[in-house]
Length: 257
Image (cartoon, rainbow, N blue to C red; front, side, top):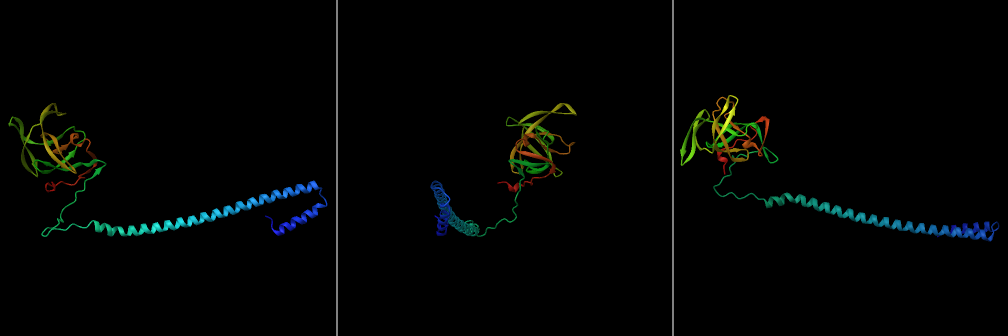
């Protein structure tokens, strides 16, 4: 609505114009002024509504900020209390009288990539028999694993084919006896006709692998390594990094469960 000052000015305007306007023109002016007044009233109402909405939003925001701050403080308090709660739940077990913790026990760190064991070109493996550590070369080009052996003597035991052979351990020879699983014929450049070799099974421990592996027995004294692990051992279980050696820790017999 117009203020008192506005009404006074409006009256003076009409008085001034009354002498130079026809009645029709005066009516048009009045209608125009009424329209302007209605628009002004509508704008004032919208302004009041907008101000009220802004105040309500500001009040709601203040409430939300206060709630969030209170929740943050609560979470901080709970986090600070976690260490003591965990300590209370995970108390060290009581050690029976006369028992001592083995502070000499070692932790074996096994190197893996995904679900596969990572091996260097050369690794120290534990085989049984003879329950000893041997240096082995990882050979992805060989289909089977091979062990250097000397003085092979085949014999029969309980109707099955067995073989007696010697392997070198720390500059001494150890005699082993194993059942022959089958025979294979191996061809080499120096032996185009091939040689018939017995296949035996030995248990291998390397990294976290503990499995029986088939080995062909042959004289490898002319080669750099007396033991190789081929694809029958490596496939699907290991990755070979030929730039490294002895990645995996050495297994010790006393670590067996």
